[in-house]
Length: 449
Image (cartoon, rainbow, N blue to C red; front, side):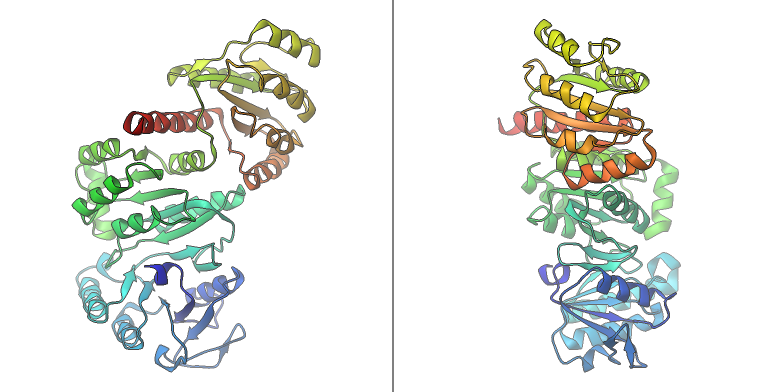
């Protein structure tokens, strides 16, 4: 798996000079992502594509190849796999569709491809998948082009779910470590990849979208061996009877009984997400939010409505509103305008700027009765990222909400992401993510002391 996911050389079989073809898009993304290994476009026509010499077959390539990315019609894949095996290539990503998900004839083709792969000991990701992206080495053998590097890895049985996750991470500046689209799981499955990524040093959090598990006992064993040490967030679909039937038709998977997964996740400290947004939010929180030392939350906001929503969420999820001591209230009143409401929530009102937040946070960082500071920026407030960065190592847990800020918000959120500051677009999402971090810390304390 090391040579498959950290390849030193890549062949794109089905590379095309037509910019509309997937074989061109994949080749161009690998180049544009900055991959430093050898790249071998493969097409029976030969010639040159994007400045690279095109080989008619992998058998003509003079050097070793670690990974073959296959983008040819399904009917051609068995012969291509035969050449991959004869060349001694250890791994293949088959992006092509038209296999088990397409009916009886496709299932027969998939079985044939699997037989050839096993004969030559080739590890296969796919078929019918959205490829692989390893930003640590600039390998975007997938789409869209995502280059932003970060600590989160997303493994997905849905290419679209995975692409959404990595797209949000790139847009907000956090980046990803890996994206792997599982597709039909002819060979490499969720258990193989989970086992790899819980050991991968570049991956801080493993996020997974799964519809079913092929090898239940082995999957459980990986969770047990990890013991909750590396955070894992899983969105498991197919919970309803109709959803389970849809899973069967999507990737020919068996969804399995949902209560079994619920018990498994609780036992081994897996965080369960209910939506795609939660999959992203919880993964981001576990990668970037410092576990608070207690349940006491202070809310600082320029938006009164957002502050009240946060209060409801804090108490509704079993956390506490921090109490401000008199000395802190006096110090705050001396630093901010008299029309600001010095309480919890601390309402800085709609004319607040970054400097006002700075003056307030400088006081709150020294209040012993505060474990977490939720800082809500309502409307455009330039300079928010620079202010928060000063307090990330203050000993408090600091998370941000940026809401209603338009273009300034997009710029500030990206700056926060680049600095590793956890920021969320709504109070609800921020507080739920904070609770996940707190619950995980409690689970680890109960298990390991």
